[in-house]
Image (cartoon, rainbow, N blue to C red):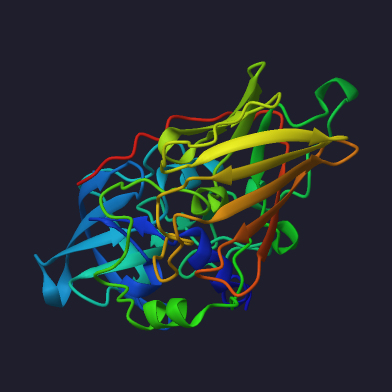
Length: 341
């Protein structure tokens, strides 16, 4: 089934997320089990980093309140859902992955009072309806191949959107060439207690570049601003030979860029975030370096990206990651406004 095919992608796009806190979906919910609940909507928290509903169950467990968590508000907007599709007091059915602790679901399907069904899981094939033949919502933007660009619109200085078409949306690998020290650190990692992204904590380099939200390049003369919708972050890329021999360590590090024909090459150091991925099981040292290559395709419809991670304390050889974005003319960066519980 398509849902199984895209389970890995979905766990990447939703990990880490937050309901009551920012967390790894797979660590907090069991994706091997699907269960149903029915009841009355008692609360709607329409926000980043995670949309949350509360549900008072009816039937055998009447009065018990469950938490239904799903995508971030930003991801919902990319599914053409800009406002809640249920109201407090509505009677709904929901199906999803049960919480490993407590009473809750990562909700994948919801039957609305209208008889329409909202499917939160999305893939390149038609959504998998559970109760209804009336689908609400769309996933076309997530699987767009490209948005054609005119000559005037070519180049990197515009907004770029993540696409999952062809499996190019995320660049994490299944295995990494780890040093013995990194292997030992990973073995001691506890997904429930060691996650670095609690209560809207920011992501640093290089994890922030895996974000599934739009990015935008802005030419500011001697610098290029790389604006990232997630967390409303801005990376500053110093151009024209600007360098700082002893930059102050920071979450995003210090970036220096140069042009090689049409390719923007960026070297970043002095990142003190301390993690390779947002899930937290891979460390990264303060001496790590990141080399990025950004190249817009000839017709301007796609932005190719390559990231080389160099950190001899963690990796026995450089790690090369790749992904791409597409250009969709009507997409803008929206305020992220992450809200802690």
